[in-house]
Length: 319
Image (tube, rainbow, N blue to C red; front, side, top):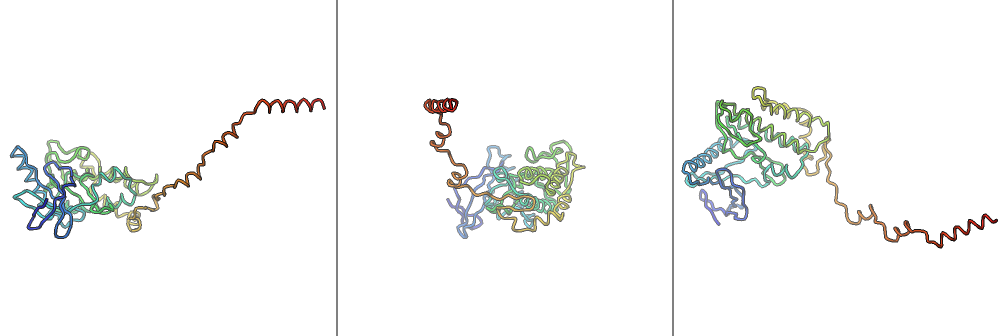
């Protein structure tokens, strides 16, 4: 199945499906020109005309916001938007989402800090442009590469472009929503994002392998606790994350590029994959006892042996 977008031809991958978003259908496309892969997000059509209009507006707003923050690092890029067909062509992330990755893998301390740094840079950048995601969670963070090194924040469908930093209403996902969200009073959009980011950091830390008492991990735990304070007036901000990343110990860890291999050997974590033992090694280490050995060990004395032994004793007495 082929598709033409902005005069360019693409092949629709019918064998690769993605879970639909709340208001959009997601498909994988391959450019016939250069073979690159892209994501096509199409607004859903509903029986209710108002809901369909709202879905179209959400997609258009997401494109406009992505276009505004296009120079930010670690943000998914939008390539094109067709208003008539309500379709948006986006950058393809080949490494899957962060939620799936940390659910099925443990990460190193180096990965924890690297991922946190990338997320900080992304949030810090779009906040400086008065854009607030309002749905930060592991499912909305993807890997641009299959080596799981480069992250990008996605899904700005619920985001707000608000110079006053004032939000009203319920946005986000249960478990990541700040306590003040959903109440009748307005709240600071930035503080809501900070809380969600803190919960995401907490999930990363819970899936990190490190030695107990590790200095960097302990400091990260303190950071998480400050970012997830229930009272938004007492909650930390992005400057706390920056201060953490500016620590000498953190900089030293991130400066070691050799750490970014799949066998991590940092000072705080020695996680070396142990090779699987061959069948021969297993046999040498834990040899099974043969039947003959067992028989020799557990052989009961026969009646004749007992008689011989008792006769010898009687002869000695006579002598």
